[in-house]
Image 1: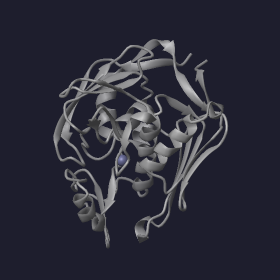
Image 2: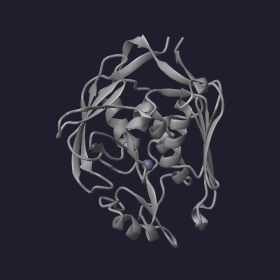
Image 3: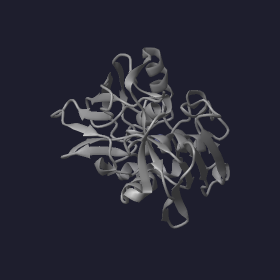
Length: 284
Ligand SMILES: [Zn+2]
């Protein structure tokens, strides 16, 4: 039987937040079976923030969770790591307003969590099984979930830039190793949008050490891309993290066309809005 998992021991991460520019420390602690993934602002009241689409307070260039004015920005890369590694329960203490961006990917989270080890628990895993198609759109962008025998992602990105005019990739846990194929893919952004983001109070901690910056003539980072299709891989990484906010893993097929944090969030809200759309199942 497929049992729930938590981390074997507490793991700490520290670093600058991509959007706030604030240096923050977090601790990922083991948690009991059926507790789920729970965040807390350990520097401010310690109120618990369990995963739920209702706790999403911003989807502007990141996914932020919050309750009663306590906000935690950029949870998606850490959540993606937990999704990818099969971790069901963890208590995450955050000593600041944002999860550290580290190198812009999920690789450092995955490496340290695997170093600490995972622990099987005494309860079977739970899943949300998609029972009928759910789709959200915004212009030509869409995100959709269809019933299917396992979790599968198909993602297409298309930007008005020769380097990123079309990238498509599929991901299934059965075919690919999340740690090797998806977790190293870094956040990316366009150089000509940096000014605009900064004016909006975002990307204050961004730089070539944590973002793949794409300029008119190509990638500006001296080391180049980690994969030829690193951007669409990162969108799959983000997608797993955004979907984890529903509280547990999904059994079904996700398709995204130019999707992002907002559409992924809208998709979860649409999925949960009607009990006919899904059912909670236990691993057998
Ligand atoms: Zn991301």
